[in-house]
Amino acid sequence: MSFILKNNGLIKISDNNEVLVADAEGRMMYYSFDNATYRRTLQNIFLKTYFVNHKRMVYQLNENESRDIAKRFYEKTRNILFKDSAERDFYGYLKSSSEKMENIYGSSIPIVPPDQYFSIYIRITNGCSWNKCVFCDLYKNQKYSVVDFSSLKKEINEINNYFGDSIMARKSVFLGDANAININNNVLIEYLKYIHEVYNLDIYSFMDVFTTDKTKKLNDFIQMRANGVKRLYIGLESGNENVLKLLNKNIDVNNAINFINTVKSSGINVGIIILIGAGGVKNYHNHVRGTVNFIKKLSLDRGDIIYLSRLVEYDEYQKNSSINGIVSLTSDEGESQVQEFKKLLNTDAKIAEYDIKEALY
Ligand code: SF4
Image (cartoon, rainbow, N blue to C red; front, side):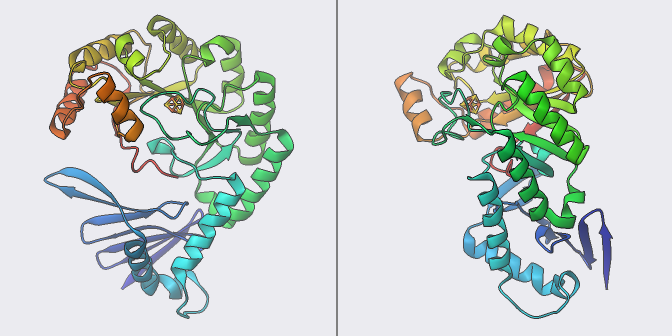
């Protein structure tokens, strides 16, 4: 026997030991069965999460596997989600829906923080204005630009049409892309006012601490807070300057501490991302020590989060590492570093793991 719950833009069906969740437009979101959960991202990527010996695993399905899961999902839900019960190409429906979404943004969205899967992504800038960190290929092929106001209005209209009634399931707004808030503050505030007026939701964004510290002052953050900005996510990676140099991340450690404390004093919370494995085996202890000391000097509270995110190596990073004689951590060494951070970070902020393989919109 199934139980059906329709609420706030979501349709949740519980059927024996299975849970199936779709949005109000009938697009699959989650499917749990046999001790695994399948999440379909808005970009039509199917992720399976499951546990092996209490360890959480994430696996990205290939297209055939995704089709099979979609088929099984709609066999069980099509009578409920659609008025008629006719068999049709449901995977095709999901795929074309994700293509529609990609057309709105002009390209795919490579990453969001782990608590922003259910946000409304509003792209106010494209790409990353720095784009030179050696471990990051998220925006490598994207030219940095700022979206103008008329394009922003068009984007928001199209996003609203795309979501339809399912927009009610969205709990926040996330400003894209990499360092979206670092545009001219008058322009930013105009955008924030408009976005807040349309959605009346808390607003979140990534922010760097090596270009933004040159352009934004306390008053700018106070204005942002007054216009809905709730938390800024900072890719700190490490609190050790040598490790930061190896990553080609231009952070001055003392400036960054003062700057993050300035952001905090405006009432905005922060999410600080630490890169597990940064600097490799050679810098293992300096990375941990420097980062723990860095965090100690921040005025963090329970509204803040520290994310431990494992380095995912791509080709260019590996080349760079071998030039610099950097040997990567093994998976076990990475796990030890995670545990060491958890033990040594003495903070009121929450500590959570961040797997960029599943941080997909
Ligand atoms: S890590 Fe952040 S700042 Fe560095 S290139 Fe990637 S998006 Fe840009």
